[in-house]
Amino acid sequence: MSVIDRPIEGHHRFREGYYRENRERLDAGTLELHGWYYDMETGTLARLDTQRRAFVDL
Image (tube, rainbow, N blue to C red; front, side):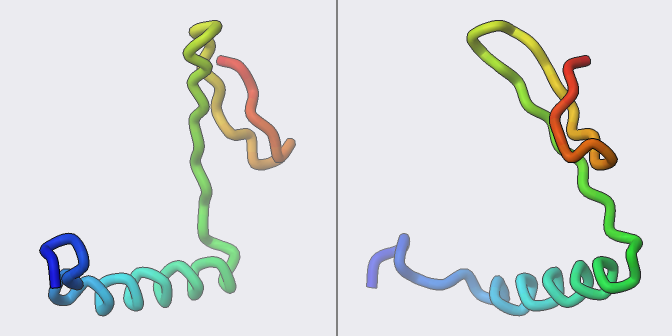
């Protein structure tokens, strides 16, 4: 098995814990999502507006 194909020790436990924590926050309505979008062609930066469910230029 090559180095690339070998699983990272403990990685699956981290992923499962991360998923569980986020699932609990999602169910409780306390999970917040943040996002940024940078358009390299125009140089504009936008942020995710979760109320509008769209990216808004800054």
